[in-house]
Length: 355
Image 1 (tube, one colour):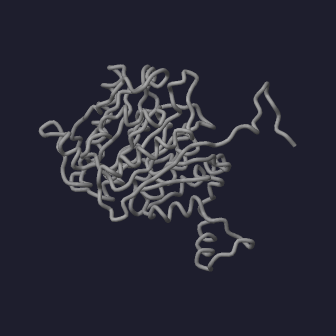
Image 2 (cartoon, one colour; image 1 turned 90 degrees about the vertical axis):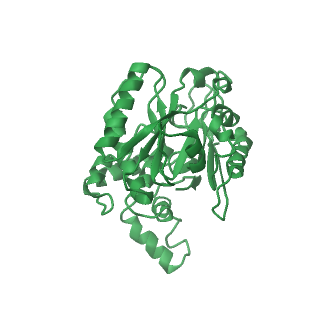
Image 3 (cartoon, rainbow, N blue to C red; image 1 turned 90 degrees about the horizontal axis):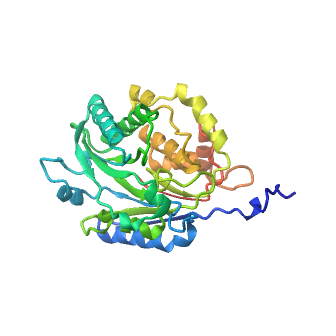
């Protein structure tokens, strides 16, 4: 039976096309070549994305890398911004509105919330961009891209990472009803480990727009890249990928069920590591996001609550298991155990993820 048509539109012609890629230095050493290779992969995925009716605006492209510590040490000179040792500070990649009154209101809320959560706000850095790299809708809807630096006051590594997760959720809830006239307000990443550079681009526009990515000191041992083809949401600066942990190609068929199951479990969620702060993170999912961003929300929560990244992914996207699928008893037992606490996100197609 064929699906119904609407005018000349035929849903049989609709296919997923996002491009996902990753590159890593297996010895863990950071260098700029990994970043350049990630960008090259992204540019080679241009055919996997889409272009808007203005023929200049892409559906979105981006790159997730480790925080380039040496780059920020030189780019953020004291006394304006204090950059301590690696993983002793977090960097937020923030899309801010261009309208100045709202911009100031949001910066005040962020700085105030950082202090209220027991962290220290070190300062702001406006990310240098080349406006000539984008045109049309992307330029009309552009935000002001800012970076904020937050020190842990003794917290570092995973302890600081968890606190930054809670901080971001508190800020998002405090600001969700603020009306934005020009641009948007969105925290693309807030982490002491990774940072996301993304936007409403075609693949080649990413490195042209963000000047940081061309600096030889901007280094990483891993890069996750994504070129978007929007299938279930309109393209926007916020919905470009990668998200904070993953880049995803496909559509999650079980999304509505996954959202309902997570929502029903929220009253009973507990974590020894997050403690009472877990209530600040709820709701886990921002349902205004795409299916990919919802998956990223759940993954981030599981990892922040103490599970390893591979463990959390195995819970979310388990291998097919059952009587017809032969597997070892340990793996089968693992899948059976977790099936009672987490429904699988069915048909993800392809995912690259990193912390």
